[in-house]
Image 1 (cartoon, helix red, strand yellow):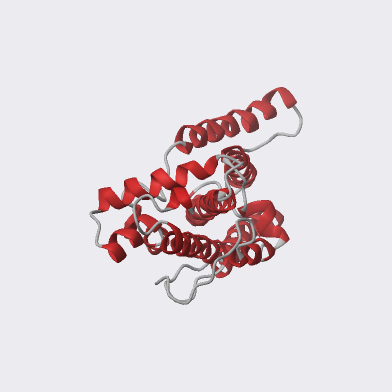
Image 2 (cartoon, rainbow, N blue to C red):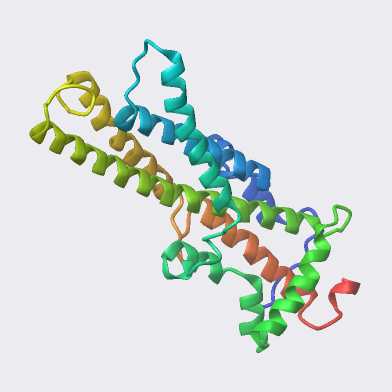
Length: 265
């Protein structure tokens, strides 16, 4: 991306960012578009809590429906364990750390970083490019900064990618667990007494247990189909991440390619 042929854009009216805001569907805004860490926590907690409790009630926890003092701890204790495990894991960002570059989503995410573009285009060492970019970008956090729109759009896109990445792998794990639970119940039906909660002989309960992984699979297909990474034709949150970072690279080419130029832009 060169600076030649580009026209100046007034702060707050970048057409790429304006178009970006209009692309979000209602479902994406509700589920995949947290505005900050609190929104991310809330969405992760709801996804884990609702799916986890449904899994426990369908496959694991046998409620008597006659003694609330027995039934309630069977539901809420595992639920609290799930929430605690998720909160302990929340500070870790697998999209950016823990060898996540080995999968296509994380690799695409990393490839969009402006600091990598700056290092490659201007022949700078990676630490120098990183320091120059972050020293400029962090100033935009101030709401009065004329470039705050870029900071806000980048921050939001970052949270969207984190949520989508989390949801993608969570649904895969939930699908695998539900299939394993079905297999375990099938084995118990063949080798055990063949009656009761831990079997597949109840037609209604068996239908619910078969439907659960199909619903999880459908959600995963929906999320994956609407959010595909790829260098040439990304969609969904990955397209928004690329669009935001392309706008940042464009800004850098026009305003800060030379040290000290951004301060007077």
